[in-house]
Length: 294
Image (spheres, rainbow, N blue to C red):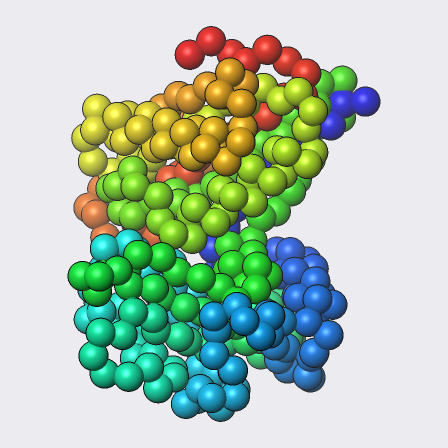
């Protein structure tokens, strides 16, 4: 029986305005796993006592502090403490003054949707930034896996019902990579970890084609090279997570296949935002087919 789907990886801001059921379902999952919810908020699991996170009651902001999800997405390896503080503010616990290697936070994220009237609902998550010996970001951690899943939702959509079983996974480049970069962001890595889990769970003999796309801003040759490099990076990461290298191919499309059209020539923040859906990586997965030649 043919099964064709699209799996869309978004940031939380896009998901809140795009489709309420996605967030509602994830919210229900978070509440079910935590067993703790109020009328307007829920605490997503407290983890094990020895998981390295402090007791949430010891933070300086009571029930947590609201933060822009995009700020969390921009935390990257190699940033110094001042750069992290500019994005996230100071840590929410008494961490000490000198040589501190870990900063802990308690964040609130809105999960409701303005179209359903539940736009004040939110969840509370614990987040940790770990610094290396030079006091630069080495890694970040969430206390429970439901929190990064809420920050970067994955939406599955059927494409057709023919005999071939195909899924297309659309990952926003702004989630995966820094601007004009082919280096995976920390939250982008977590999103790809979940994609690898989907491939392992839902497919027996997948053939995987990874296609990178850019928007139309900038030089055509540069965009083509960037899209190709990003597709290769995604492919390599999935292979590192256990996907068979022989089943996967990669290709760069540049700006040749936009999904939205936006007016304007001069580069502005509004135009860049409008073109965001075009900056993406598509992963097409076919069950039981030979991989396409590169």
